[in-house]
Image (tube, rainbow, N blue to C red; front, side):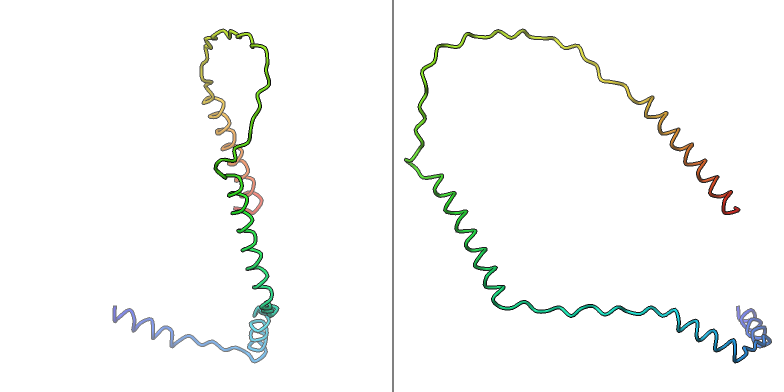
Length: 135
């Protein structure tokens, strides 16, 4: 490994590259031109203390309303009185028992055919893209 490293260092020392001042300026200008600018985010305005008080009071009021409604609906001893109107007896309806003879549908063949068609379409599209880009 040492022999290879020495040979690589010797080969690298023999490489002579010169960059003209004009090329150096152009490279520097292009590198500086591609630095993305960070957009300034608008400063967040802190909300006033009155906002926090108002939102807290609104939440408390809503909770109290919900508790009051639930308590009003579940008062023991205050059951609503339901009056049943007198009606004539309803004749009993006899419903026949139907023995449905059903079978589950076999959809595997159409689904398999659809999968093969989709794979074929994808392969054709891939070949077309390769042809268009010259691969």
